[in-house]
Image (cartoon, rainbow, N blue to C red; front, top):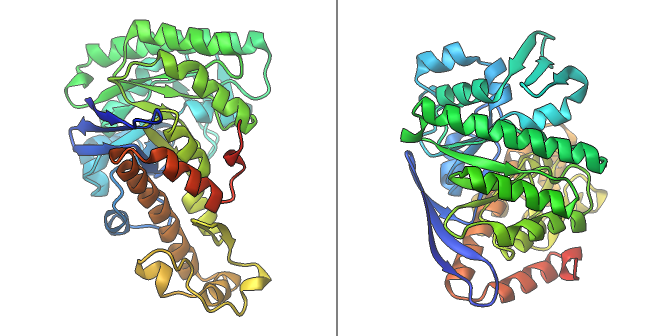
Length: 376
């Protein structure tokens, strides 16, 4: 599945490839989030023109709508949607965390009421595997328990124990149902902000054995230092011949920093969420287009990028559209943001290839005016 091509001579940054049933992926990479089988406000033609290599979708949401009967009849999400590049599906574990008021959890699984209509549903490690088999995703995440922040040591330990037990059950069902033919299964490391629990979780998942390893339970309210502590505690334990996924982070400077720590895979809703709120990401930081300072700013949205959406639309015009609630502005800025992320990953791959990642990281963090320029 994963092939390590090289490691930057002066950092832990890795260049590699992941082979899937729907094509090869160049690493490190960013996954635009298509929770419901689409990236909000963008078409697949948009994603292809941007150069997006794959899409992330969500098991919990797709199970509710359109439902597995429709996806099974369609032959999976690739056929249903018309997106024929790789897909990764989250298991719904984050929804177990974020929709805490709507669910009851036990060692067997999770009972929850739909946030859409209140109907009752039940997820187990095995049923999640069945759902992801029907979806036909190339990379599959097992059901896990994401501990809240803050939480006690005892609660974090319980989430590690349950995540390990569910991971073992998930893998057993994954193999029993022959999902291995076209799909790859990841393990998700939990442990909150506790070093020994993070290490324990990683070691237990390594003993079970997975196609890739994800660091979960991050970007849930902890400080950036605590987030990167969790990464640094487990990274030395992870095998070099498997992909590493830092789940749910986020900001461009955090992604650059994490690539330097040896991470390969990223996802986040921020590019399109910020786009829908008329905020653009640029090399010089964020541009909040609705701010009054841009009312008479006729310069391009991002003069540094030679793509139509960044060159053809001025900040003043986009501000006008955004203030009027015109969806054109939200589409243009979302497109520009996803392009920024995807292009940033391309730039980092080139820097690793040329053994200049440390220089790239330093220059990017300076220009972005990132707090991560300083030690964390």
